[in-house]
Amino acid sequence: MISKRLEDAINAQINAEMWSAYLYLSMSAYCQDKGFAGMANWFFIQFKEEQDHAQIFYNYLISRGGRVLLKAIDAVETEWASPLAAFEATYKHEQQVTSLINNLMQIAVDEKDFAAQSRLQWFIDEQVEEEENAVDIINKLKLLDGNSYGLYVLDQELAARVYATPSPLAPKA
Ligand code: FEO
Image (cartoon, helix red, strand yellow):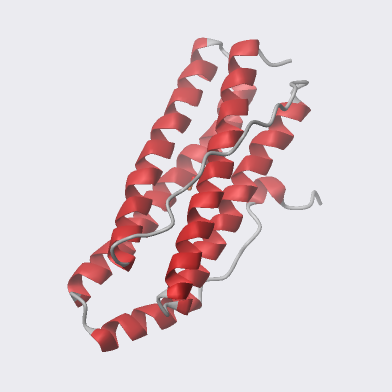
């Protein structure tokens, strides 16, 4: 059984992950509109990953005897000044998510909930990757400094990103 405090915090995190999904879907639509189909693909996969994160928390809460309570998803922005601005907003957002995950881990530690700590460790590792991915693309966009051919090549690179089911949602062998 999971504590009420952790149950409430995980329900809030499910909402935060769904909001993240909505944010990245909005960024995908923005990039598509600006003619960057590869970046739109990158954000669309990000959207799917955030839905996965919500589902992992959803499944976890149920597996621990908790009650999932879904709340309204707030509106997201729809316009950015440039693709670089969208990726910078992504990095800023992921830093906030890292802080939310760290808070969840702190609650699990306070409550001596070792099972929750085990699940949250996956998210802690995932956040390292999330922040690193955003920084990598920001650095490339800054290097290109608006060069059209370079942007085209980067867009092609981001078009190659493919979705992979995260290990917590993989079918059990
Ligand atoms: Fe659900 Fe991008 O972290």
